Length: 436
Image (cartoon, rainbow, N blue to C red; front, side):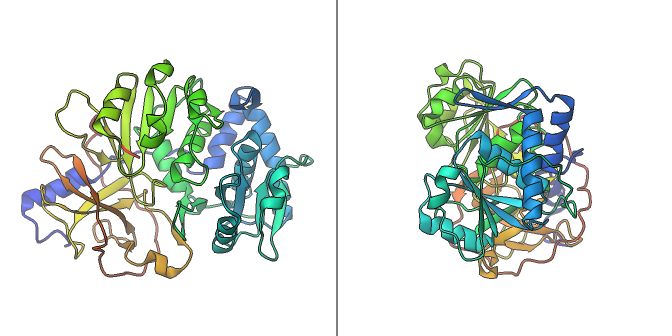
């Protein structure tokens, strides 16, 4: 009994506060959700960039042709394919093609990333194929045995049938955060459990316009792109000035740094905003944007690649927003020995359930101390350090108190993940504020 040391009331509150609601995810594979919109609404606009548009039917058809090409090149489920490209419509085609082929994409903005960094990412992720625009092919310093495919070269149409369909726990994309030597493998389950439930999906629906403002290499960029395309909205791909794409957006996912350069008054259609990154938005910034839209502060492990808690900003409240676990996920406040702490005590925040990434890419040493067997869910499940300190409030919210520093638990080898049992039932999600 991992909670035996707690008083009975704190044992009860551990689950009441730390467990997100169980919610069904009807399509656990990202590309299948996009394909469904292509079938039902083939003429709906999936993306626009510099005046050019792409419908869902076109996106699915072009990505299918490229995916067939990738399969002929030997790409298989479980592989990693480099997506070293600039934000563009061909980039979207390449992203979906990789998923259709059953592999995980590894994004880098080729125009902003040094050749040494590109080489490191390609080697660390063990990519054998890299996709890019034709003009950037000379910038790609590939290790021996790699193949470059230009996204803007015509590919004859051929429907792809992957040899094996990926599993929801297989990789969807691999995030190499700035300054980090290792990548984080994010699974289809991580993505769909957040984006196909609320509040993580931000209510995105056909007719919405989601701005794509963030660097491709950062984790939250996948939330912009996949959160839009899996729910049938239009992705507005930004250029060098984020404010231009934001002006017509109804939904934004952005960091505080990006938001500080945009005037909320210039975004009259905006209704939902997810703020991501550490630290979260300042009170003044959140107040400013909350006059325009619902502001959610979203946080989680893996440099924003995965979200485990969200909190809705209330400008009338006299305190920072308190966060709650997203659906199908758990959040724990633990001491240095990984024991649960009573409500009100400060400890390190760990996350479990469907928000746990598949692990780090770049050597077993990079996982040391970050993953551990989850003694609370059991059954072969894994929990992950978020790297932040926090404490539960008396009303059931999680206060984020900043980085945990270097006081890490003893390194633990990451266990093999078994089946994914349903999480125990939980109380309905309260209306509070998120962070990314």
